[in-house]
Amino acid sequence: MARNDGPTVQVLERQECRLDEQGAPGWREAAVVEALGGGGDDLLRPFLSLIRKNLPNSSQAILHGVRFGRAVEILRRETTVDDDILRGAITSYAEGKSAFSPYVGWGHFCWESEAVEILSVPSVRLNALVFVSNSKRDAEAAAAFVGEMAQVPKSRCLVFSGMGWREAPELEEEIDGASWDGIILPTDTISAIRNSFERFFERREEYGRLGFPWRRGILLVGPTGTGKTSVVKSLAASRPDVPFLYVRDLDMMGGARAIAQIFEKARKLAPAILALEDIDGLVNGANRALFLNELDGFSNNDGVLVLASSNHPERIDEALLKRPSRFDRVFHLGLPAFKERKEYLRRLFCSPTLSRRFASEREMDQAAERLAEGSEGLAPAHIKEAVLSAALDLIEDTEDGGRETFEGRVLSQIELLKAHIKTSGEELGEMRPPGNTMGFRSRRGAR
Image 1 (cartoon, rainbow, N blue to C red):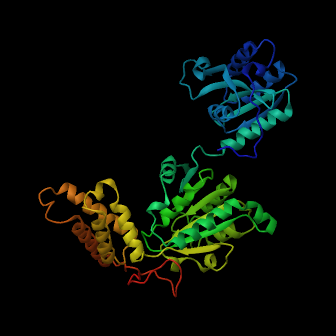
Image 2 (cartoon, rainbow, N blue to C red):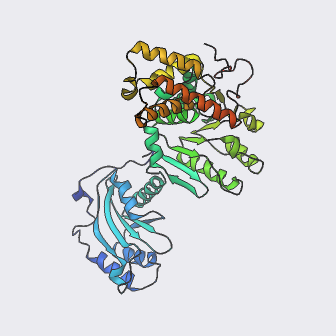
Image 3 (cartoon, helix red, strand yellow):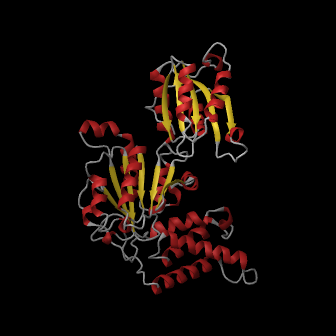
């Protein structure tokens, strides 16, 4: 995704981009033969020498670590690029040895009305791009632009693991399909979460005028299955132009180095969303000081919105919770009350496949009400699993499919889930904050 504050590139017709009257690549072909004929893997120096010899009035800017194809892809978003002046494989000059890459890509484009050549000089150590122009300023500006844009991932979603960051188009696809329709929370809770998130991106100038740094931390806590991950995905879906960085695990050395890498990437891509799942397991004694410093220290986190979640808020370091500048808002996503369970069941039943199981809207509503009574203490994820298992049973069990109603099968699955949760030692509705804190419900499920 291109930055709005990057250099401006003027799109011109290809004939206006000629570097000389002839436009012939003759000396360039000779330069390739001469440079490669010298042997060795350091091709940059001989190429620069030949460029300066044939274009004595030109200036050169060198960019390392970006492939020619990636550079052309970036430039083509902004202007017309002719990359067909010269291309070839190193086998052409290496006695039939296998090519490790195209030995050279040589093209030209226009940068703010100035002609610029781009030359790729790969080696076994580090690829180099040479930008050549009669304008020193334009050669350097074009190189800086390509270097900056090459750091922006093709997919807006990145996932961190012990090996570092990787692009995650599959996560981007999930986020693109996320919506608030499948999230069962009190209306005021959803509104408060969305407002806190959206105001951050919409009111950047107000932060500056008030003298506050443009950063924010939002923490979501609640039992497993109450929709924390779905809330994060739905928030990210509302900002498709903002990079989304997802972290669930750190490296095996306690995560100190990983934490530095995580926040460094977030700052580089800011404005960005940094999602930390199960933060109670990410921050420990070995990395606590570094994490607090990265989150709220001397580093400039302008534009970074941290979205963290936890199933066990009692395990979160108090230093994260007691200073508002670290997590400005903490939202409790509790087990759904009766009204919310009924609404969620109705939404599930309204699918084309399941709605056929009911003779009328009234019958569907009554079934949702009875099942909402029976599913007290279950999270939305548990309720969804009960409905799905019941529907699959009806499809697979053809012999006695008519002996038990769909509602009865859902209720049976609900009871099985409750028994499983109890035997596994997980107390239903165990996470309830004191008093009337937003989002949690008593085990009686007040209506």
